Amino acid sequence: MTLRPADPGGALRPSPPGRFGPAELRLALAAPRPAAGLTSEFRLVDGLRTHTRRSADPGGGAPAVVLVHGLAVSHRYLTPLAVALSPTHPVYVPDLPGFGLTERPDTPYDVPRHAAHLAAWLDAYHLDRVCLVGHSLGAAVAAALAARRPDLVRALVLAGPTSDPAARSRRRQLGRLLVDSLSEAKLQVPILLRDLWDARPRRVFATLSHSVRNAIEADLVRVTAPALVLGGARDALVPAGWREQAARLLPDGRSITVPAAAHNIATTAPAQVADAIRTLLAPAPRT
Image 1 (spheres, one colour):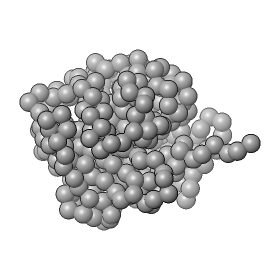
Image 2 (tube, rainbow, N blue to C red):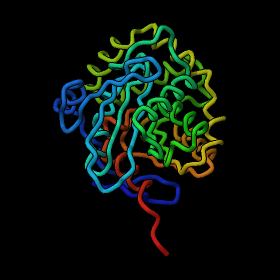
Image 3 (cartoon, helix red, strand yellow):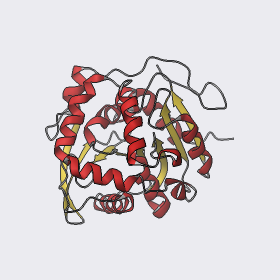
């Protein structure tokens, strides 16, 4: 069921959340094998062998959508959203340095360095004017890139952006994450364990330490592209108040809440998120 804003505040009408079952789990764990129209590629970017999961171009001239994953995870949990978007847009899901199937650099990257790598990755694929979709820590990376390289970003989607000033510490972020896990689909656990194994706990902890020192609000006010802040109504990691504040900081931003979803809305509510992205990218009606 397609969701539409129910009121000026941007809440969405109730609808069943997206399903995440055994078939979706198998698809998420398929890379580097082709599956559901998604294939894997490896390219050298800034000296690192970088993995990308991508769809075919459906034609029609629609802008490319680039999905940026969060902390400790990879392209895998974004696979449901990539599949949902692939009928209308070419979709790319790179693994950031040290995560998923991308080579691990000697030292963990902070947010600005991840953003720089992502810019180099866009150059390697000859992509610009993309719709950049970041989730969780990936939203901070996407915001940093959009602020620093506006020429590369046509539109920006921040899903569950971390971290808000009220919880800018490792203890508070981990505490909120534990609470959020109670509302998440349990079949996500094998994906999270595989991603944690690939990244190694020490890298994850160091990246978390970097992330809580990143003041995302300083980047939000510099974004010039049309922007959307998304979040689940049950997201305990990124509260609604912060999402609304983030949307207000964006010069051209708005906020939408997905009912019944928790933090991992790209995994458990892919149809709703894909609809919101398509609406953002739809041409303005002629007057």
